[in-house]
Amino acid sequence: MNVHMTIVGPPGTRRITANLDAELLRKACAVTGEGITETLALGLEMVRRSAAASRARSLRGKLPLDLDLEASRERARR
Image (tube, rainbow, N blue to C red; front, top):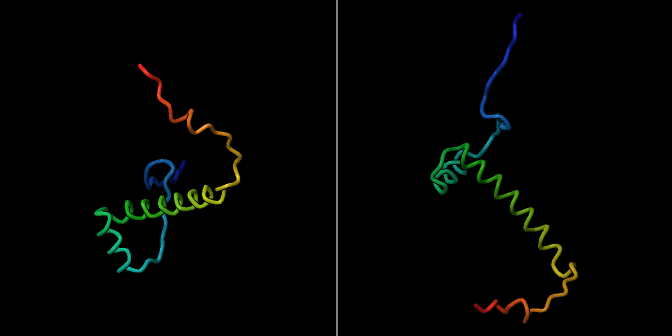
């Protein structure tokens, strides 16, 4: 029985090939102080967060809130 298995990294990871501007990659790695993989992961996380923040901003003024600000500012006295 011939079984071919390739282990490339931890479960849930993917090995990719990408053509990137060498100078941009060098500068990004210098900013993060990390290697290529870590720098790319950080960049992808920033893209994800930016999209989530954009979606949250699009809800501004669209959610009905009935708050009593004065009551919410009061602290329980000890």
